Image (cartoon, rainbow, N blue to C red; front, side):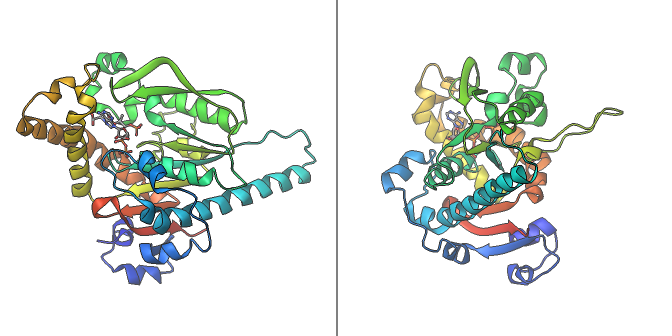
Amino acid sequence: MSIATEIIGVPETLDHFQSDSYSPYHFFSSEQWAKFRADTPLTLTSDEVKRLRSMGDPIDLDEVRRIYLSLSRLLSAHVESSQMLFEQRNRFLSISDVTKTPFVIGIAGSVAVGKSTTARVLKELLGRWPSSPKVDLVTTDGFLHPNAVLQREKLMQRKGFPESYDTAAILRFLSAIKAGQPDVKAPSYSHLVYDVLPDEYKIVDRPDILIFEGINVLQSRDLPAGGKIVPMVSDFFDFSIYIDAAEDLIHNWYVARFMRLRETAFRDPNSYFHRYASISDAEALEIAGDLWANINLKNLRQNILPTRPRADLILKKGKDHLIEQVALRKL
Ligand SMILES: Nc1ncnc2c1ncn2[C@@H]1O[C@H](COP(=O)(O)OP(=O)(O)O)[C@@H](O)[C@H]1O
Ligand SMILES: CC(C)(COP(=O)(O)O)[C@@H](O)C(=O)NCCC(=O)O
């Protein structure tokens, strides 16, 4: 099924939707998308791509050429035009003492879909454009409530669900970033110990671009009954990307990664999952399958996938993490 069909829910072909004036998106095959690279030079080396990719993600220079060069070109055009608009507005308002605010890109998608790799590759590529030499990357896992709180609130089986995050802290963080404040602190998370790291922060100091990546970044908030309207995380975004793939593929990637982590990270006695390094393959497969089905798949269906139509750009992956289709919101 094409993303066009899935997003709009009408069983038609991709070709049909490409010419459908009612769709809010333009749809491109990866071959069509690759042509928008134009003469953008490839500034990454094969070794750099290997260093940037997450475990199990086979992204290589060909994929960077095919998909990410066009994307970085498009994004840098957005960044430049927003910088121009900013300057024009300041002239219009006769504001001379201006505080620059970062261009914020949100990256959403399921657990194990490969958001981190996309975020790191984009960070590198965007940092090589003259308009955005300083690019920072922050992930939302640092804003999860500590395990002690999740345990107390019986939310350990809901890690990644909206209620497991300190959303007020995310909103305070993004408000400070968009206000152009210096040295804004982003909290840290360790996948190894499976918990937030108290007193460990990343300092974000007025970058040209901030990439904000996490499963929850396009979610809206329920209005409290009779309460005041609160902002959403995505209110702070200048551009948003949803990384998409079929459920069964993401399931496979999650389980394969879990099995590989048994050979690597889980062997570390500090790993929260250390006990899974020494069980049988069959038991490990069952545990990974349960974690996927009972937590991450439920979260994907209930809270993540419903946010897809809010993205400015959807990258749809097929087998081997290769991007097959791109949907770009019409302006
Ligand atoms: N249990 C774990 N131990 C060590 N690293 C992990 C573990 N789970 C996930 N990771 C790593 O954390 C990063 C984020 O993973 P995830 O939140 O699933 O998002 P995505 O796969 O979309 O990047 C990835 O680089 C992944 O390899
Ligand atoms: C920490 C996560 C919620 C991802 O969070 P994110 O970085 O997207 O905010 C996820 O990796 C996770 O731990 N899920 C819980 C179930 C599991 O262990 O897979």
